[in-house]
Image 1: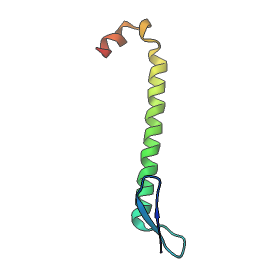
Image 2 (image 1 turned 90 degrees about the vertical axis):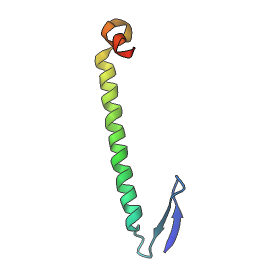
Image 3 (image 1 turned 60 degrees about the vertical axis):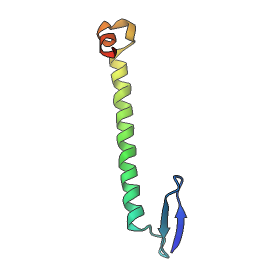
Image 4 (image 1 turned 180 degrees about the vertical axis):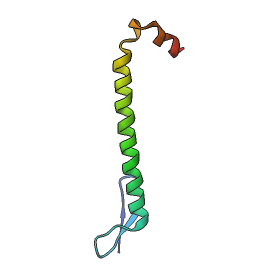
Length: 66
């Protein structure tokens, strides 16, 4: 087994078969899900900004910001 440290400083191991242990595999799966969720939320925010338009045009948006 080979122990490695990822870019966040988290340790994981690689066995002789070049496979990743279950803990690291689950962490990678969870990270992928969170990344997809973040990308989805960014797209929704950009869409909402496009629909709302500039703040000066819609007085209702200004009321919501207060």
